[in-house]
Amino acid sequence: MLKTTNHRQIFFSTFVHAGLATHQTGNQNQVAEPKVDLLEPLRHWLDSWEIQNQKLARFIAKMIPAQCPFERDIILFGRKVAHIPPMCKLNPLYDQFVGLRFRALCYLADVCGEDIQSYC
Image 1 (cartoon, rainbow, N blue to C red):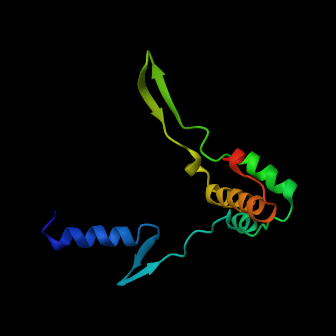
Image 2: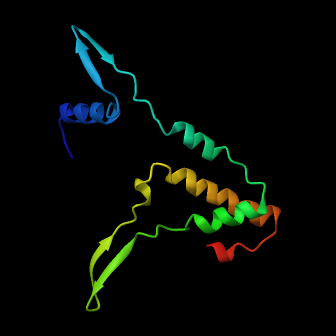
Image 3: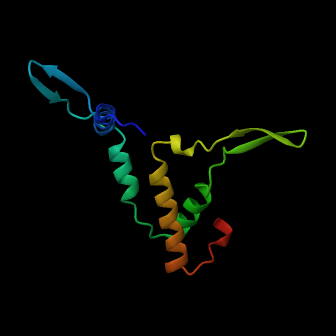
């Protein structure tokens, strides 16, 4: 635990302003405008999809995996020597795809009355 407030102020200000670019002109600090997110229209489009078709809901539930398919344990001579972590979080549209799959499963279970155990 640090007892000096100087370190806390530096850490807190760095944490709060981590995503903003700043530059100084004279005595004034000016904050630059945040960068434009080019994927925002695609994110909004994926989030706005309403599942209203049983065939489409089944397709989405089958195509989007329930867990990351890249996560692996590398076992050599019966011992775990390495672990490959899930890389799905690196996908900038990961949350939208997970939400889309969830909406498809909810549609199949609630509206169509299907058993969704086979999709999990």
